[in-house]
Image (cartoon, rainbow, N blue to C red; front, side, top):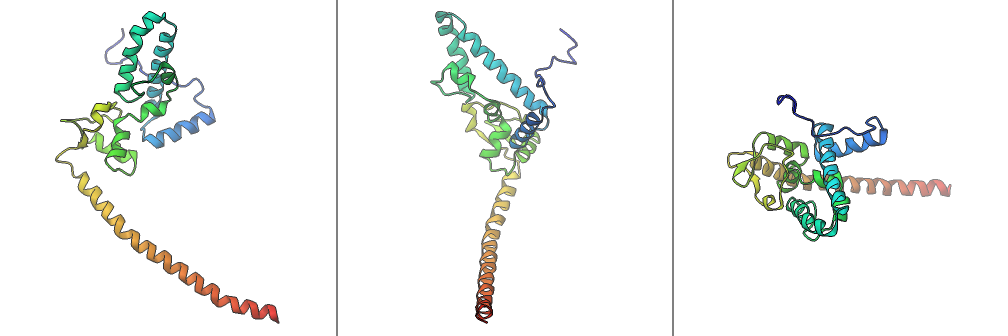
Length: 206
């Protein structure tokens, strides 16, 4: 059983961790979903392997036993949004790690509440600015169910919504100024080209 202070690992390292292509793919996934360490990615891979193993085990069972146990697995996966309600075991075997990471609270908060990066959303979650329904959740890796997705919001005392609104308004004010500067630069370039054109024609005539 082991010492309760040192629980059993719930993740497995890849077989070839020093493979260059694998390392680049892992780094890309870490940046896309705002993961803190590769351990979080390995946990997702391990969970995906567990789900696939269950699906393969069901495919090997007799038809009557499979008909009894398959709906339990499909219902649990549909509840967290990994598959649709009419999905099959083949759809479960086609899942990838991005599908699991997309159901993390951190990822959904990034898309739903207007954060620019998943790292900003992670910080907001950890510091207790996010609520799921009537309770605060400060775990970025929390798996959000379909029923909970619409109930994600900022906590009442959070000042982040006001800061996001201020940032968006400043961005809108800066956008017209940037467009005017671009148009002015384009007009200057056109005028300069028009002034140089006669000189080139006269020199070619001579």
